[in-house]
Length: 309
Image 1 (cartoon, rainbow, N blue to C red):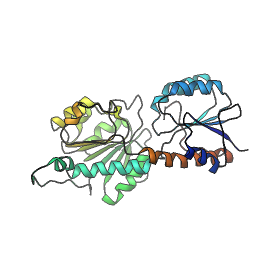
Image 2: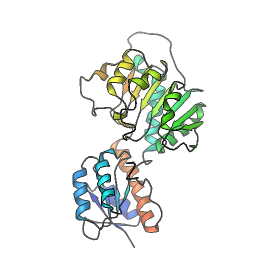
Image 3: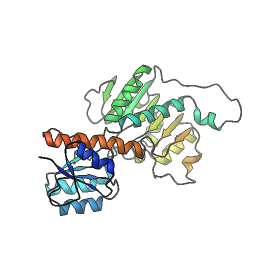
Image 4: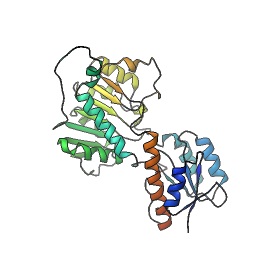
């Protein structure tokens, strides 16, 4: 049977084509629609109402890898006992996001913030990724792709994740409770984890004090995982050598915010994956999941409603 899938609130033509390419039928929301591609990462109220009004919907595809905005909705779904499959785009954007993380690390190691602002010849300085110690917080698709990109640099890599099951390409895998004891060994620290109650504000003044003064931080996950005031202080006092962040707290980062004037900080405006990239890659995910529904095989990127990611 062909699944009937609606796309709301904005029915991008690419998503409609993806549903058809996967073997489904793209249609307006009606009593026969059993799937929903939800394109808004912020409006959880409207989505909750649509789900309440359409009990026949059994699958929802969310637009991004991060689904922390939907935590309240997930909790209410669990409490109601509704049998609903929710998939996110986790893993779909892994290549451009990992590429962006690598770019930030290389730029920091070569002191590009300083050189781009320079009007004189300046000092000779460089830190190489080759044979460095790398720590990655998060063990999902972005971490996997980043490990693949880092492999030519012969890094020693430690992955911090909920499960201590080994991750392909990682030298070692540890639990979040062991982060403190390994943080001080890292030359480059990458944040690639979901935003949860455990990770919110994780990188605070205490964690920055445990990093090497020569270490660099790269955050391509969620801004709220890093305490912005603590990051500002760590960079201004030389507690760490530098940072590259594609996400901020608050976001967008307002004009005049102190972080704009912090030394050795690269801020990119959440462009690790652009809208054009997201539409293309999410379309590919929609094709896969429509096919999985038809074949009764596991969906890609399924969200654990209890864990919230």
